[in-house]
Image (cartoon, rainbow, N blue to C red; front, side):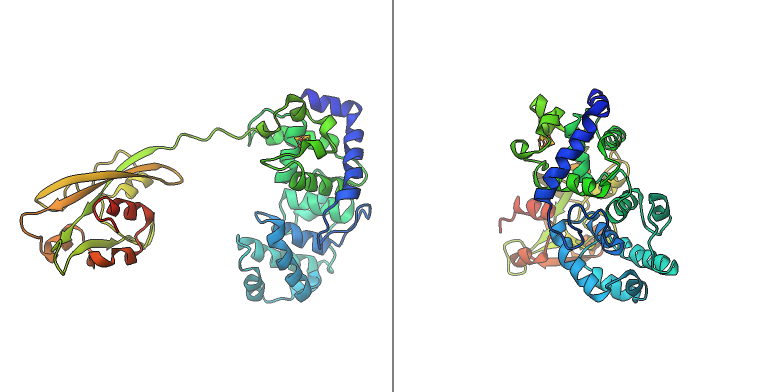
Length: 370
Ligand code: SF4
C-alpha cells in the first residue's frame, strides 16, 4: 500500500489530470456517452448501457442499445412497455434477470415522475441497481464523485499500485486505491477514462505500457511485470475421478450389428443425451467421489477392458474405462434391458448419428473407429 500512500501524498491529482488529458484525445465514441468535459449525461441512457454491459462486451451491447432506445426512447416509455416484449428484445444478451429488473427499475423511476435519483444512495434504492451501477450512474450521468470499479478499472488499478493481495480479497485494496486517485471534479470522465484505458491500452493479455499515459505512475510497469496483476486466486486442484462405460453389442460383424445406448436422465451431467451405459460415475461426481461402482459387470459373462479415455470437466477430470462385453452367446434384449434399463439397440453402422457426448464418442472409438 506504499504506492497508495504516495498517491495520497500528492500524486493523485497528477494521475487524474494525466488520465483526463489522455481521455480528451482518446475517448471511445459510444452511443450512450456525452463528450469529454460535459460532466453530465442522460441518466436513462447511462443506466441502460451499464445494465446491458454487465457480463457483455461493448461490441455486443451497441446494437441492442440502439434498438432499445429507438423503441423506448426514455424511461417512461420503457416503464409502459410490456415485460414480455422487453424480454424478447433482450433475447441474446443473456442473464435474463437483468431484463426483468430493467422493467421494474423503469417503473420505479416512472413512479418518481420519470426522474432518476442523483446520488449513489438514492440510486441504490432502485430495483436491481447494485453498488457498481449506482456509482457509475451517479458519476457519469450526474457528475457526482463516486468510486467506479468495473473489471477494466480493477485491472488498471491493481497494476498501477502493484496490489499483491490475490482476488477476491484484493478487491478491498483495489477499491481503496481507486478511491485515492478519483478526483472530486469530473469523476464521471475519470471513471470512463479508466474504463477506456483498461479496454484499449491496459488490456488483460497485452498491456500497451509504451502508449500508456500512466506509465510513469505505474508500479507494475516499474517492476517490469504488468501481467502479474491483478493477482488471480489459486485455482483449487481439479479432483480426479474414475468411471467405467460398457460396450454391449449384438450380432457384431453381422447385418444387425448394434450397440446398446441409454438416454441419460434429463437432469445432471450430459442430461438427456444418448450415451453408453455406465457405472454411475457422474452421480458419484455430484456427491461422494469414493462411492462404490453401481455395477461392475452389468451382465454375467466375460468382460475385458479395452482401454480408457481422459476427459476434463469444469469441476473434475475423469478417466473413463471402456469395458467390452464378450459373451459366449449374445445377451437377449430382456437381459440387457434388465441390466441397463430404458436403452435401445443402435445400429453400429450409424453410430456417428447418435450424437454421443464427446466423452462417450472418444470411448467408443477405442473399439469402433468411425
Ligand atoms: Fe497498465 Fe502498463 Fe499503463 Fe501500468 S503502464 S497502467 S500496466 S498499460
